[in-house]
Every structure is written in structure tokens, then in C-alpha cells.
Image 1 (cartoon, rainbow, N blue to C red):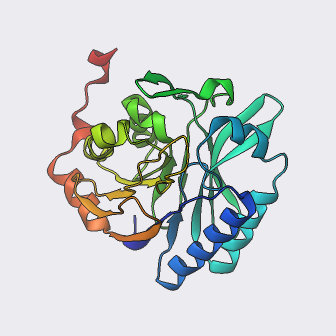
Image 2 (cartoon, rainbow, N blue to C red):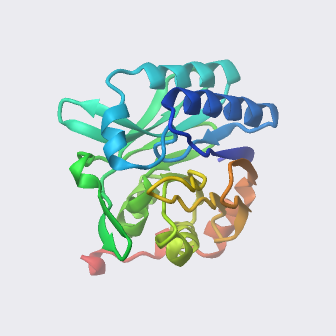
Length: 268
């Protein structure tokens, strides 16, 4: 892994998909001017997280993805698209992509664990809209080896561990926690995944949209392998930055060699 500057674009989406895409590209360009080499967007970055609307605005082709590929190529950056609602032969998938500075897609990941929950004041059934993914992988890049999971996936530690066992040094997590789960669990879960897997974690949220029926929590985070939050947003739209220092990863793994001390034969 190399030491480099990363950024998360915490967008506040409006009810206009095209306007949100334009805003995202503008924020990517700003982050690039400020020296970021890896830039990440949130889960479903181009619309408030309202499931019935996502069925309507889901991508039927690769037009949005191609625009982001062109932006990565122009800006010479690694770009995680956040996630897109993508229509496939098997249904709509919540899918994120990692794009190289060449514009090539290095990694594609569809959300595996769907958010089907019931709280007082909030009921969500993602399975009504989305078809779950079934594969996890990582991408080796000159900056480091990167994996992607999406939002609710973070509550299933086996998935982040699978990325780590595949060699991940950086875990990118586009997400849209809400104002019930966010205050309770957001910081704890992302710090825990960073600590137990000794990876950098980039948790990219939508900003809070007050008029939406689904209130995103915001608070995008960048966490280092020791579990230290090295950058955090509030609820509003903004870009956050952090240097991902390779020495922190190396030192953490050297001083506490968790992967070498595992006893998987006992865990089964």
C-alpha cells in the first residue's frame, strides 16, 4: 500500500437525478483539485433513499456509469461510484463500482444483505425493490488492495473479514444509515470493522434530506486500522479528506498480527 489522500463526497440529493449526477461530478472535480487520489460517493448517491422512487429511477443502461468512468479518466483518479440502482435480467441490484484512472472498471459489487427491518416510526423492506448480490472480491491497485461492501452489509462481520482475507487494506462502504440506527451504531460498527480487520474504512453516507421520508444520518467517516476516526462529516453536504498513511497499516499489523493468530479450525 502507498500513502495517499482520499476523499468522500457526502452529497445532499434533491428530487432530480440529473442534477444530483451533475453535483456529484462537480464535487469529484473539487476533490481532485484538492489532491485526492481515491474519491468515494454514497449509497444511491443520485436520489433520496426512498425505495419506491428508486424502482422508477433505476438505471436501465450504463449511461450513469459511463459518465463516472469518463470523469475518473479525465481527473486521473480512482473513483468508487457509491452505489447505483441497476436493472438487470434478475431484477434491480444495488451495485457499486471501483473505477481506475484509465476508466476501467476494476471491481463491481452488489449489496448482499438487504435492509428488511421494522422500527417504531420506520419500516424498510429493500427486498421488495432489490435483488441481492452473491459475490465478494477485491481489487489490487498501486494505492492498495480495495474491497467494497454496502451499508447493511457492515453488520455482518464475516463479509468484511472475507475482504480482509482476500487481501483488502482499504474497505469502501457506501451507506445510508438513518437517524434511528445512525446515532446508535454508525461509529461503533465502522470502527469495529476497521479494528478487527486492520484496514482503512471509508464509510460514505448521503447528507440528511429533511424533507425525505427516509432521513439519512450523514456523518461520513474515514477510519484508520487502529480504529481512529481521522475524518468525519456532520449532517450537511460536504467533502471530507484524509491521508491514508501506509505506515499506520504496517505498524498496526506488525504490533498486533491478528491474521496470523487466527484459529479458523476452531471457529467452524
